Length: 414
Image (cartoon, rainbow, N blue to C red):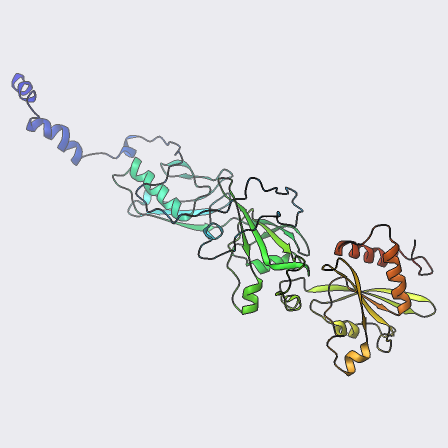
């Protein structure tokens, strides 16, 4: 024993090398076999050995931009223009990130004891074999694979194994649609639903909508807000497929309004005949009936219809075909006031006068007889609140058709 001690003072003996180094190396026992306790897994930092993804610079709303927190807003904050959506570059709108309700399956090659399938709970956690509770909220499938691979390699295996993860069940997509749509509100859609189908479910876009500027707003896992502008008009005109936007739970879709003076290169008639806007518009009819009588009617016609299309749907008792005193009344947003246009049905039919066969818009009013036109315009002039926009005009027409502006003798109540 004294000789062994003396030798080890000058170096490591062969016996010590065998007992201390070689034997433990040949017959080592994995640490997971020495402990049957499970530990919660902390959120790991990014793997320094894994290839770094391409840098993504999210579009952050400037801090000095005033944002309306009212969920009923339909106007994008002034002075802020989101960047255009690009399928190749807009990674934040295309990447799918896990959250509550998603179900994943994880396979660890050559180590089936680590395989598992689980749904993310309300906090974004899952329970994995031996690893315990781990947070996957806000991660992509690739990031899940890297996270589990690193943790297994660091804690239980000599080197990181090969991990394959798959999304086997997707959470429902609950989103908000506001702006120039027929029925703003909250909607639940299936994964992969195209943007145009979502707009159709929301009642379609209005005739005041600008489908060149549909804003997708998303709040990321770290609280960052990104916004991008999707143009549905350009691919529609060019006959190309629409941009492939992967909508996710919590997204807000804002359909912008067509601004005055920005419709030079915007074909409203073409858009109205597509499946993006509301498929039906309502045109109002004011016409005389019998002795000093007046009929007030709502005519529902397909979006994109013209004046003659409305004529074909009128009741037989309306003397529109032979009457030369027909006027179209509508609110012109560019002029900021109510305008009228005289229409001649016979001239339109016999001479195919396209200037007379005007495309109709939602809430247009067709007035038969100049006497009634004078009464309608007179009512507009003397109402207590001047009509400054399409909403004021629509409100006036609705009150007229509700009977609140006419007395029993069909005179305005002023």
